[in-house]
Structures are given as structure tokens and as C-alpha cells.
Image (tube, rainbow, N blue to C red; front, side, top):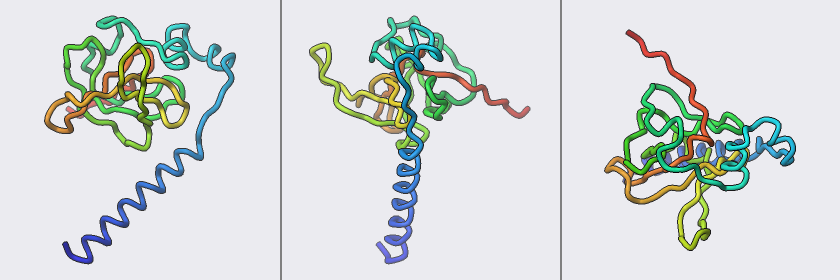
Length: 158
């Protein structure tokens, strides 16, 4: 590896670190009452109380429009539709996040299991879990709750 390559990698990593730092500066905090005013009861249960919607019940499970999936709590861009796939699990599944700085992954020991919980880095909303059984592109399956997402359609050029 040349010195130029090492410097370029270093610059790229520093830029990513800076972006993550900027995202954390913009962190959103609200009281439970404020969240209840802007979220539906189901969205509140899933995102603020770490709930899970029933499999195959969410509006985005069998939804294939082109666009961006955003956090329901703050609008942070999370997933592109071109990374969505049918995992057959009953929840919208993606093999990659738009920006790993937009999500936080922590160990979840609830319900007698050990899983990796995915939350929004900006507002702390519980989004779902990530598993290591995804497709070859990344090997990841981001298994998200539809109630935690808002979809923004992207117009396709004809």
C-alpha cells in the first residue's frame, strides 16, 4: 500500500468521523408527552418503548416503491429502497444502511435472547434489529419495524 493510499484512507475515515460527530451534535430529545403528541400509539410503543409489530402486519413489509426510508421520529435517512429485499421474516429487511453514522447498534438481552438492536442516532428511536444472515452484499439483515419508518418516494426518470 502506498503512502498516498494510506493518506486517502485516513482522510476518508476522518471525514466519516466528523460527520458522525456532527450528527451527534444535532441529537433530539423530547419528553414522553412530546413524543405522544407527534407519534401514533403504535409508533410510540415501537420506537419509544422498544416494541415490535406483529410479523407481516407492517405497511412496508410487502412494499416495493423506489425511495428513502426515514426515521418516523426525526426524519433521519436510514435505508434506500434499492437495499430492501424479501427476507421472508415478516418485517421490512435491508442489507445496508444509508450511513452507519445515522444508526446505533447495541446488544439487546431482552426476551431471553441476545440480539443487536438498531436505534436512530439522532432521536434514539428503536427501529428493529440487525442479524448476520443477510445477502452476500453485506451479510447483514436489518429487520425493521414499519411503525418506526416513514417512506419518501423518489420519482424515477422515464
